[in-house]
Amino acid sequence: MKWKAKKKLWYSILAGSIILVVLNTLLLHLLHLKIHQRAQTVVERVALLPIELQTTETISDIAHRYGLEYVPQGSQVPHGASEFTAQGASLTLYHQQPYQKHAYIISFFNILFIGLLVFFYRWWQVYQVRPKRFLTTNDSVEIPANSALSAVDPRVADQSLFSVFLLIRWSITLDETLDVKNHFSIAIHKKLPNSLTCSVKYLNSGALAVTLDRVAWGDVVETGKKLHELMFRVLRTLRADLSRKQVKVGGCFYQRDADQADVYQLARAALEIANNNVWQHVHMMPLEETHASAMQNSEEDFIRCITNGQFVLFFQPLFGFKQQDIMQNEVLLRVRHAQLGLIAAKQFIPQLHAKENLETLDKAIIEQTITLLTKESHKSNVSINIHIANWLDVEFINWLVTQMRQATKINKLLFEIPADDYYKYNQQISAQQLFFTGVSAGIIIDHVTTPLMVNTLRENQLIEGVKLGFELVHQVQQSAQQQKIIKQIIYQAKRLNISVYAVGVETQAELECLKSLGVHGAQGYYFAELLQQLELVKY
Image (cartoon, one colour):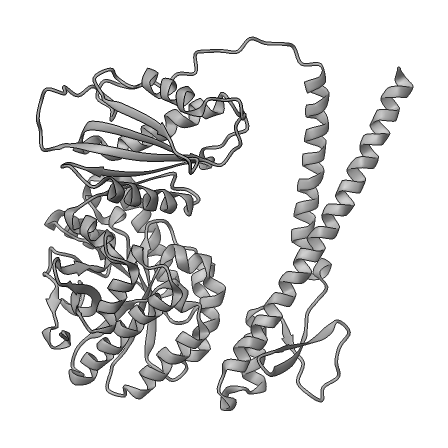
């Protein structure tokens, strides 16, 4: 018996060693590919620079940003340097070997690999001698009487009651013999109050459709969260390795009779938003009359409105507390629709998916803004929202800088980037700094709801400020947690020497609280309505 145990142990060590060698080989290969991709990016960016900017110092600066060293022509080529070619340009770049440059990553993953192998080995030993147990049935979801799924008297007709349509999708494989519709329908009906009307349908797309009637306005969002938790519990009884991020819920809520196709499209859009977000598992969207009508129009219809000039720009002022005056104006877009009048950008931009359409939209806004600033040079600085896809497009940035160079009378253009997008693509955005040499431009990080990533923001010299998201500003005077986060953001901003602004200020109490916390300025309907620039409207 002892010989068999030792034999199994040695076999396990041999198998673990082979797995470790394979994983290390794969890791080194991936790190080497990553270095070569960075080198290729350096060459592409240099190729797009004007000839006069393609100096040794400039190229070395770009290469340094990507962790590489440029070897000028005629210099001695060190061991490990390689020649990279892209778009007609050829550069010799030197990089350390992956095991030298990323030794800390390799060490970390080796510790992780060994720990996982030991864990699985110990788990397998325990699993082989595990005692048999009975399945428990006490895994229930408690539903308080005042929760989102509480009973609502169906006899009471109230305009604050909504119908809720939910699409639920999971990213795990279930047993083919399972009757999905009946299984989940029974599970959901067992957990819901009897007075709450509910219908469940399993769609061919693999999503579960749940319709709830007469849900109170204040409970709509909470309903989506409760259904997510309920489905997570039910699915976990089938797959013990399930995590919450593998269950996503997208919902649409509405009051009056609505076209089911519009309801389904909006719920599907909400589900896609939840799918594309790592931490947000539930997303709910209202079906408004304007939104319902707008959804019937195709993406090309909205772009046609933009190309025909059927839009108007509004400017929302940002007031500085210290200056007691307007510091900036944020450009907001309204599309002039033949039937619906002015449609807010947030109502149709989610319908735009094609890269060329997003580029057309941003170019139209920038051109009109520059036209206005050229006519009225006394205007304060203006901030513009540019889609992240265009920020990553070097040709678009070249076009943007060209437009700014030609407009000599403008003071400064600021560009707003959502915090999540900036953190995700910070390297690519920081590498664009060189293109803005000689032009008056800056970046504002928008929708900030968590403490800043100081080291990431420090890399970009164009950043001039951050804007707190509405979630942090709304009723801030009542939340100690929101105030704590804002204080931390202000402290970090001082280290970066940038300003902190608040967005969506609506009450005097919010304003006074933000002032006491040290915020530099704010914008919102508390200060002023949107200022319309009628001279920019075309028909």
